Length: 174
Image (cartoon, rainbow, N blue to C red):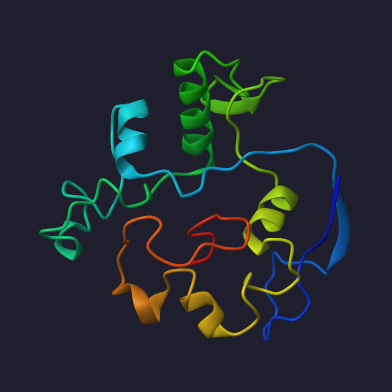
């Protein structure tokens, strides 16, 4: 089991969705992809690339002359991501964790790919730390590990270009 401190209490301004830090115990292991799902990976499974920052997307002028297949897929919501997990699970002959019914995606008791819970994500993202970013609480700690306004040029970048966290995961901030 992994015990971690979830939530935040040290960010300079109050964030409505962030509650006070509290102890959470993770009792089951979870595997994460080392990087975000790329546009190519998403399109190979779903048959389409909904990304704004792609050759066919509305933000194509921001990525002109760039190959965006290795950029993260974006402009997807939770249901889209869960459906991707279900289809990838089926493709790899795993029992899907999600199913679609009446236009919504609902969880099953499957063994396939799934999205992490908030506690699982916080633990993976922060790599066991209690700081806002895995490298610390300062803005420069974000910029070494994630894309944000000061270093992104207001567009996406290929996955895995910045520093991985101590768990070996890339692009967990930004």
